[in-house]
Structure formats: C-alpha cells, structure tokens
Image (cartoon, rainbow, N blue to C red; front, side, top):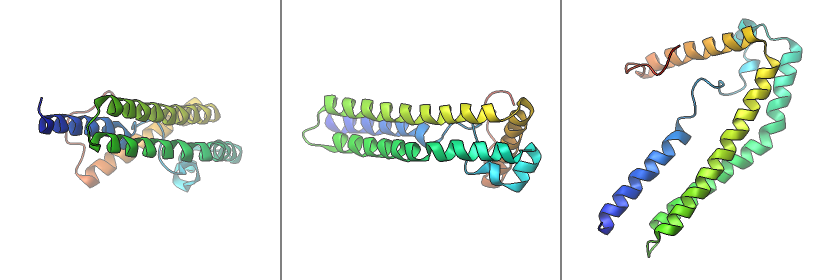
Length: 156
C-alpha cells in the first residue's frame, strides 16, 4: 500500500474511532444538572433528599471526570501526533490508539458507575419517567435539528 493510501486508511480509522466519543450513548443519562431543572424535578417528583444525593454523587465524581476527559484529549493529541510523524511508524500509532482506547474506557466506566449511583437514588417509576423525558427531549431536538428521519434504533 502506498503512503497516500495508508494515510487515507489511517484518517478514516481515526474518524471511526472518534465517532463514539462524539456521540455519547444516548438514553443513558441526560446531560447537565437535570435534577435542578424545576420541570424535570417536578415531573419525577424528586424529594429534596434525592436532589442532595444526586448532587453529592456528581460533585464527588467531578474531579475524576475532568481528569479522565483530559486524559482522553491528551491521548487523542498523542495519536494524531503519532499518525503524522515522519518517519511513519505503525507500531507507535497502534500503541497511541491503544492508550486512547484505554482512556476512553476509563471515562466510560466512570460515567457508568455514576449512572449506577444515581439509579440507586431513584425509584423504578422515577427512573422510567426520566427515560421517557429523555426520549421526548431527543425527539423534540431531532425535529428541531432535522434529525430523526432515519430508521429507528431499537425499541422505545
């Protein structure tokens, strides 16, 4: 494979690898401080104690999340540098890609653990209602941004 073809393949691979980071798993947890939004809190019937617990969970993990996001960004920079380096060394690019994947895995794992902690605070009905609100928000955003016209992904 010539050098130009190799760079095209590598570039496509980097775009594919970056996709999951850019499109975080929808349907897991809403972004932002959703428990503080009066409409959401009212619809879920969150108690003051539940709000405090969710706030504590997010504050407890905030520094870790910032560090992990930074590690992912640094790994992406290192991967880009390795892929652009001359002479081109596929082994170094593979290693940089592995480091980036591991950084993303740590970040996703921390997000998942926070999700589990929040789930423990909510009742089954509140959890279900939160998912319904997220689906409604996603549909409204899709209509607003011209999305949602393709095939549906999974049952709702």
